[in-house]
Length: 466
Image 1 (tube, rainbow, N blue to C red):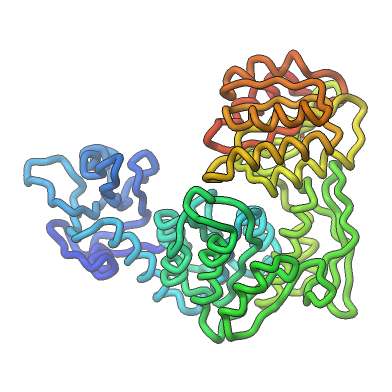
Image 2 (cartoon, rainbow, N blue to C red; image 1 turned 180 degrees about the vertical axis):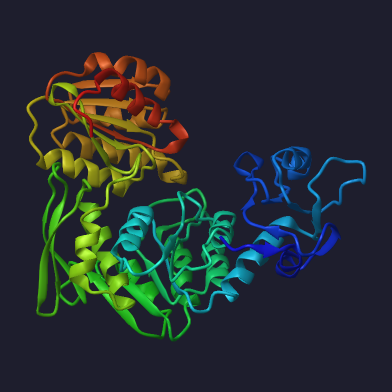
């Protein structure tokens, strides 16, 4: 990561040095003292819930070299040796991100957003890029107004290509992140029903995601999903070059022949003019194939060889909570898709369950789909219909909203249904429902802690491993 002097930090934040040696080197940057390394910098953010200034003592105890603050500590107060005073610590963090971006002009910058598949697409894209490149990508879910500048501040000095994931929960946020990152290549993976608690309609979500295209430089390349009408419309906000992807016959990078198999993972064919190739991923769900084609389009935009990019993507493993497949004792299969859920993401998992045969039962553990606003009840009832059509043997519904799905699924023919108010109670009961050869898909959102269920099943049935 970039090693800045305190003097650089003052310039980057727009603040002034209250105390400390301007030549002191700062090597890492955090907003949470629990992540602090010795010699790092702590941004004392003042949010509605926590005041970072209350943790300056802790930052000093963990060996912070500097802190960026809105209120200078008293001389007798325990605090890091270097103190940079700013008007607003959040604005200072953003300023630092922009400052870093401005000092890495030789880096290739790629940014992506979308309703579903952002993180998987980011991981596939980072893997697709040449082994000769030093690639820096968004770590974990560091994709919002706090995470993006921290991602920039953690970028190694020898980075050749940066792959950045951008997220939003309201209008204007993508534009803000685009101003900070100014990518050479930008993509909206798709537009789906998500964050409807902050938007009135799908069109409004599309317009907010489409800020990515409107903020791209005319010389930058837009990556466009031709299968998604919202993406096609929003991409017209960019006047520069584009590369398209999808199943659409006019797509520059076209997907075909998707084989939605559980093991070894989804397979598909990809075509670009006279060139074509069969790709075998280690990811489950047809959505992973479309994420891969999106990543290939972005890799093409920066001149990567598609054969080599496909070969590298075939080695990518699913991350925890993102469709990770576990092989358990007694030929049981567990799919951990517990990180997030939405109507379209659930539909993709239901398709996976429907088209794959297993020796035992097909069991869906479904958690509430969150942030759907006034449509949440209706969308959970609609999910119940989809569940009934997916040949589910057992439905375990978790959370108050999923009760609507359970009631609808029962009306449409699912006989074995269990409902629990929280994941802890579900985790205690589910192991007794499982048997030899069963397929268990855990689909939920972080807000319900569905990973608790995954861990419990693993602990009870671990055998041959994943």
